[in-house]
Image 1 (cartoon, rainbow, N blue to C red):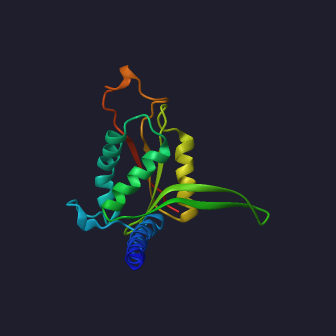
Image 2 (image 1 turned 180 degrees about the vertical axis):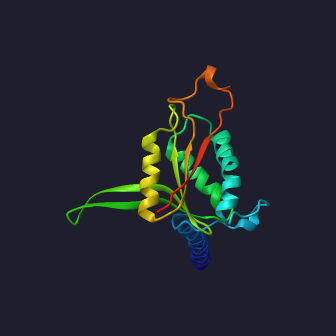
Image 3 (image 1 turned 135 degrees about the vertical axis):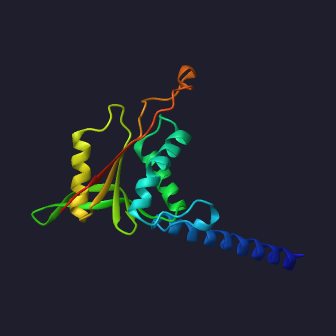
Length: 185
């Protein structure tokens, strides 16, 4: 009886290690921005800036339609990154830009989404009620200049503060604002 119990314990441990290994492999793919298996869905992969320009408004509106207007920028960012990875795009999230003063790092800035296509692209996301402002564009230009990227998009997911109550459940369908910017260095 004791041998049988030990055998069962070893079998359970083996299965547990196998599951952990599978999860670890998937987590590594996610954390390093690897695209997901694009053969799992019927949508064609996005491989160029031209294709991204065509598809991005639809992807953003899909994210907004599913999540609604009560979320933070980071939530929309994660959902959009997933949509892009599902379309075969390599996406890097929260890419740090070190800010140095006299040789010492004193701060960092972060690019929301850095896409690797036929040319690199930066997506700067916002979730603001007031709409996009000049300082948002300046932020995108700073990132584009730092990375020497010529294509960038400023995207606003119209945000409603707080949490939905009974009257706010049936909000009119708002649209996400997407602005394309090219920057000549």
